Length: 416
Ligand code: HGY
Ligand code: MN
Ligand code: MN
Image 1 (tube, protein in one colour):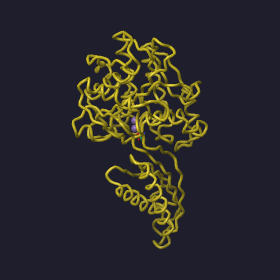
Image 2 (cartoon, rainbow, N blue to C red):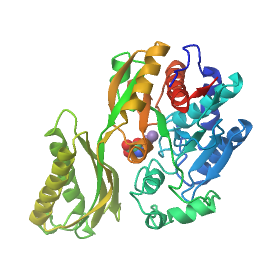
Image 3 (tube, rainbow, N blue to C red):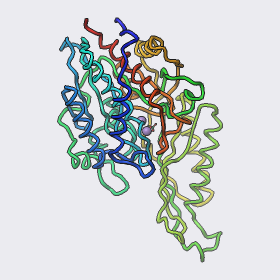
Image 4 (cartoon, rainbow, N blue to C red):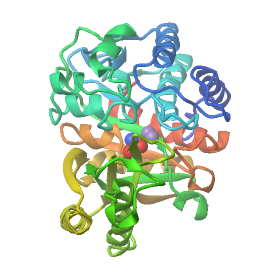
């Protein structure tokens, strides 16, 4: 397949303006974003994205998980489309670029092809996957997981947020539950642009990450039960302190992850304490342990040691403990040809680059199970993400979107 020439570049100002226009919807309190999945803010962001797609002449389809597919026709209607995109939902204290750069970078490809009147054999479909973050409703990468056949739609429809609202009801309430069967669409390939969310590219002065692999993820929800009692009048030997049990288990989580250095990581980001009252000893705590590694055997070892060690801690303290697997996927190896298209694009465009393993999970990790898939990464300041101070430069955004466009256009085959 002929690669486009090095002068084919996106419009960096237009991309940058679109990202910051989107950031006005569901703003965080500190300059980032709080556009959590299937909230009214998510609905507003979807409306803006849909308007931009219409202005770019794209045909919109929405599936039963609310994922948005905006298609630019190819010259060969029988050719499977090249899909390209990411997610518009954010963390509660998220940044402006996580996911958004990938969706709007994909849209910028279309806008640039339209400007130049470039046609491709394969259609190109810009995609906004529903609920990539998994923060309001677990698990992460929910819609792409249903699309890939690894999650059950009726089951995830019933998943609730901390207020007891159901995902399926909320998707319907914001008016974005589509008609299309999830997974019915067939792809020629899928590409995703994403900020690195780690420190490597910036530290090494690289413009582009050529993502060859993605590390695996395991989410185990742990429930520890003790006994509510007065924090003042209950003698220490009589306490059944679920909060203390959790503290000792979290120390164990840290030790387990460190035992597999340098790549494995472990922490708990979600913690609910009951009744969470200043003068009541916690009777119940619910928290999610997030383990990750590029090596599946390491993930399995960490899960097993968590269960054995946490059970021993709770037995010794007279506490109850339950475990529930609430999310996870195996380490990912992306498609060689798609990775080559990304690497070749970075070289052709003169961007410094290095191969990299994705530390975070992405929709591409699930789609890679079905179709040839690869990712492009750009640096982010101090490697910071899932924080309102998340930041990138316009130049990094443009480099990433240039490489994304070249990989997509080469794979979609330019028609002279
Ligand atoms: O959890 C993840 O890795 C992704 O940011 N949802
Ligand atoms: Mn993301
Ligand atoms: Mn994220």
